[in-house]
Length: 299
Image (cartoon, rainbow, N blue to C red; front, side, top):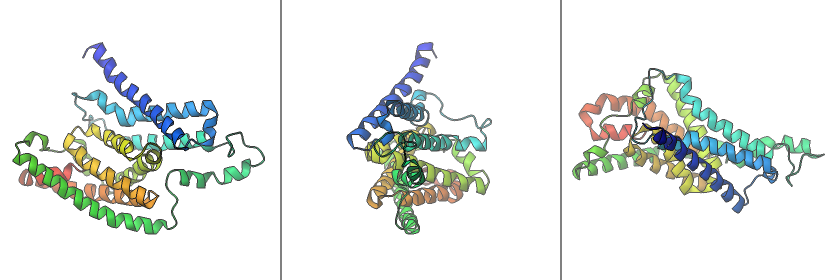
């Protein structure tokens, strides 16, 4: 690869990340969603750069590897590394919130006599900003479990139907014959680790993409970013299921005005995939073909 190609592979994701961060900032302003702290220019600029950085790492970086192998070196991969991106997403949301709300009053100035009261309410403000406030959290989680099961069945059947149609139309190359190497690697981890992966993905990704991004940039863009974040699996067919699931979660959040049902549905989906579907599909892949590949393509 030439030095120019290497530069472009870095520059394109970086420029897209900065552009996306600027778009988010402008949309927040136009929707009246800029935090009071952002009236101080340094806070707003710092938040913009923070968002651009996580967009570059977690959303657009795989685009710089188009045409190259996106598979990680599993011999060098450790279990803690599975949670690294999620940790960065949590850090980004937390720092963005602190830049926007910590140490300021409602008018965007520094804390004065009302500082103690403002600080005391910071936790509730955090929950409100990211869709974590609900009158009945347990009820919302229960609803998410029920709808999550329905969504899982619906999307699985849709992928099987799409895979079958592609085969009938001669599009065998579009249907994955084997999962990305990372999928069976995760599915072979201890049950406790797989449960933690499911919980981490469901909670962190919903807080970031549906709680943080969706109210500020809309369903279309937040869904596109969610799909791009999963592009590193290297199988376009998988992105079909991911897109459908993301839209289901997005409209569920819009309907319920909180992210707890989406968290429950997401955790349930990933848990069923990692604990039941993927291990079973791996055993049946040679015999079941499209059905097994479709199941794997949903991870």
